[in-house]
Length: 469
Image 1: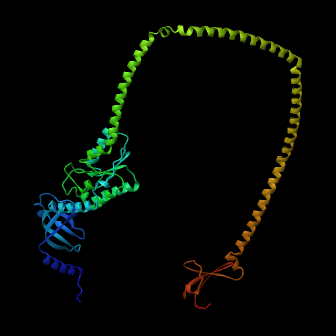
Image 2: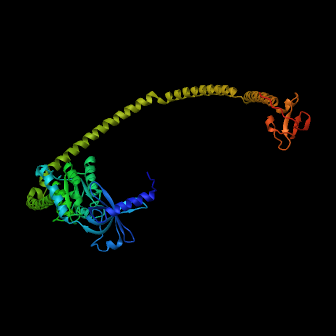
Image 3: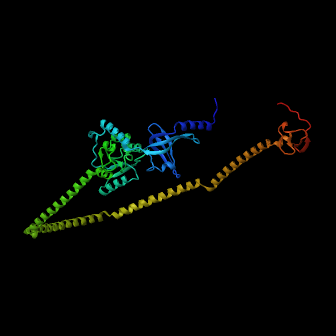
């Protein structure tokens, strides 16, 4: 078996592919489209099961009626080439044509029949819009005119509502999945009373996301009532058929959301006008009654009615004054009797006795307090406290001194120089002044220093004898 380099096998593949696919026409959907500053266009051509990298160079792109975009269904004519630096095969397109809407219409018709047979469009499955929704959910693009139109209508004509926008792509790759997920999320968290799903007008290709099965399934499964507002009045999508209510425009959808509330408000305004009119009429009649009543003599001169009561009031007032005078006189006599009794009892004598008892108790308290203070003062005498503190400090110093002497004795016992007094010596290298611990650290004729207890010797190594320990 011949061993090939990467370049050789890639070149062989390139020859096989490019000679076998010199003229091909491939149908598919554009995605990941990028237009370079050079004018060259790179994109992926895909279908449900596969994809192929494609390139449309500037010279071929000049003949296009418009620049393609993600989601376009096209037919690319050209040849298969291999881009060796990446080892990728790609479709080199020389002519690009857009698929007509015929195929899309056929798919739309097929899906419409399918969902109609399943009962997705039947009136029995339609949910009634809430009469007074507090929260309105909107599934659309956050940057388009749709959300602005909806907000304008709701804010201008209604009040007291809460709007939640779930921003999604409304065309191109991934748009259908985002729309379906937004509908499912509103249902999962039960975060709205009614939903508006839609976008502005456009071609069949632009509105295609609202014909995808995943969107139709999500709308049908929704527990929250949905108003579909896709495109303009003449545009229809499968979302319009499966939704609970179809609005011709997004603005009309905003009107539908709170239509019953508006009708009720109109009814209340009309009722208010009728009540005001009836009240004015009733006040007119009552004024006439008041004017006629004012002509009655009993009303024009109230003293005819009140004279008897006024006289009775004066009589009662006189009787009350006489009664109060008699009561005051009796109370005054009683007060004089009590004053005489007070003088007999002489309360000032009792007050003097109480003052003497209080004085005696005060003296006893002062004596007891003085004795207690003397006892406490003896307990906290400064001289005795000083002696106790001195004894504690001296004891602590004595213990520290004993510990220091023990530590000094220990350090003296482990001092290497003390060993020299017992006949030991320490061997140093003459050049490095480092302690020699092994015979393997010296060489023949090397000068050494020997430290003794009373001096230093210099010697030279004549022979080394190694012993095994």
